[in-house]
Length: 199
Image (cartoon, helix red, strand yellow):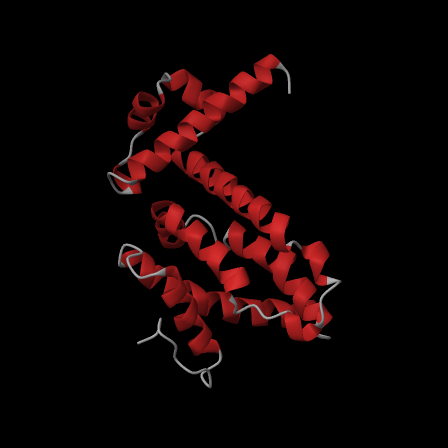
């Protein structure tokens, strides 16, 4: 990346950060381009050099956060590890997968809420990446290779987990992450016994 590209990138990061900070103060629908420019310390022409509108900025901010999430996830439990694991070890509903996911949601809760309430994006980028990077390889290891079947099963799983995480976000992420892990686990595997978290 040359100096000019680095400057362009750094300015985009400032506007991403400005959006996240503003989302802590107001609804996305109440944020203006002027708000972004003031918070990021840039002028309107700089904003329009990067984006056509606020939805472009929202999309980029979400994609940057998602990339950061998958980079951190892949460093520990990336798709390359699936080939070394037995089918019995590949359980989605475990702290190994849920804790980093829930930490990401908590850190980016306002962005997550806007993303899930937005009608702009038909299928979330995070959902696509979860399906590609986790669900497809794990289901394949368990003998489910029909792409249509995997997509239906993945959507069912993601919708249930999303409903719980959205309720958690609405409550300000006040409940402990391990408690939410257990709630999700019990929904998927009702035969599980409650522990100290789910009381």
